[in-house]
Image 1 (tube, rainbow, N blue to C red):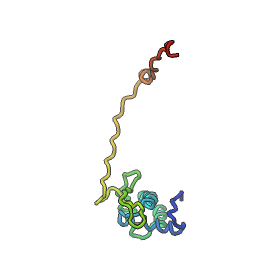
Image 2: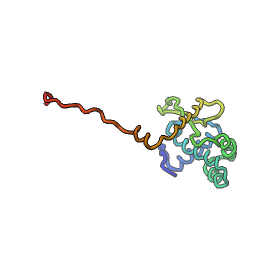
Image 3: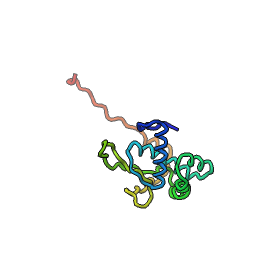
Image 4: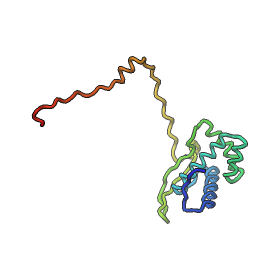
Length: 159
């Protein structure tokens, strides 16, 4: 895998924690954790949804090697794959919530978008600007000319 945040844990503990948190996110569709952990979970959860959308036997085995639980695996390949079939990416949202009392760690909710009981509604897609008719090369050349500002004349008194 690519570079991860170390999160102050040995590799085995870190990967086990991330696998569990991704599985819980898929199961409950919203969890609260620290901001650093949420940013790592977001990468992995989006990758798991992408495998669910792929739907092949190879993708199922790759997802099963990471997430914990058959119910989580089934939800990935049925419900979430169907929900995000038209979306190209960005399946999760990270919302900063508070500062934890014990150690002042910044906390955040991470949740799947386009679901019931969202903390914040998704923004509508931005409309595409209307297509302009192509210009002929002569007109385009004339319109793209850059005109220099007029030169200031130097007078003898400025020296």
